[in-house]
Image (cartoon, rainbow, N blue to C red; front, side):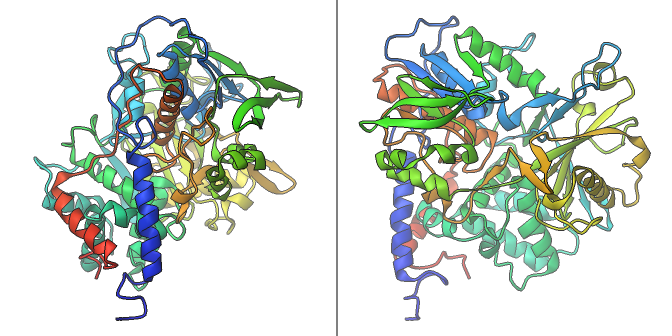
Length: 603
């Protein structure tokens, strides 16, 4: 026996036993209780089409009008609860679009800006379900009909001509281990200078994930970084730059050296299955985008629908203190923009703001009532912020997503105007803008190519110049898609502000660091009338996304219904797809994990 007692390298026997206990608890948390964030609930009963007069004892105060808050409000309002949403700034949260002020002329609308471009992978289930229940004129499936399929992406690699990489894997008629391997090879096979043996190694590591038991996923993968899970040390520069770093940064804006391997592999598995096109739960294609600005296509119709169901929206108010008496929330102290205080009383309370805004609310008295909520203070947020370039000439870039693989700031983009239902030039701006190139910056800590500084240390103008320079360097090889003279104007997310040489970001994004599952809350807390929404809540997709926030809002609504003793149907919660073809392999791996042995493919 070696020093680690024969267990997986890097894990001693105590680690494995601890991880098994934590993993078992985590699995229990996601499967045992009906109506929680990890439970596959039955589809809700048919709902009336008119507001229902609320019954006594069913008032709900929701703090935060982003994806989680609106989703909770939706489910509760359709079931007759009296819902009030308090939002300090804008409804829709990071998903919203916004007007660029003073850019309209000739009866057109202002140019559309946004925090970052929206996309809807085929593995999303909760968001499309909600969208199908939001009316939109002329659409048989409501807002859902405003989604348009995206078939491929433009991949730029420095020094090489950009290529079109398909999102879907052609020729798959059934799911087998062999077809999963084919999908994985398709996903990474276009990468230049990647040694074939290392591509095969990457596929093997992903197949190890597909055949890992829940015990190993929560007990081992959760406590490894993605970089370590892929055994990056000693591999080629292409393997480290593209498979380990770029794919992670571009798809989930996560740092591979700190992010939980379980989180990254979970979304990777879901994306691969969606790409096969034959998993019934993952409908609508591998990926989709909206056919117009987010607020026009989704958020504004959603808010209008919720108002029609009786939801009240109180703007300019933020929660500043949860008041606890007798182990329950007795009231919530609010503040407006001037700092003036007021108090909200309700039967149930939902804290549905982002993690950085929720942390100040979790005071000692709240943690005394529910000690697990202390973990919120250990969660970490990072930056992923968007910029839009408005252009007077069609770039000629192929339709679809744009990924600049290996770019210092991990930039991705979307050429929006050609994929929108309206005529961009006739609808927005001054009549000279024909295209909007929306770009997300996912790495704000790596020095750029122009100024040698990370984005967090750049001025607003330097950010603009650096993003454009990286986009040109990664996309213009052998092309002339992006030209300086075509830029009409640009817009950077207003959540970024500069003061005294310091950049502040009002809209950071949770990063699922190693072991962070332990610290994240469930939607239902130990405080009987307090519930949590947001993409930091434990969910199936386990990634800070619209999908996670939507699921958490549904889980919070279900928790309220449970607390109220409501006999009606619960909000549907959809687990990620678990392929039966791997059940036998997972059972073997569960036995091996409990015995302290590595996975059969881990070698």
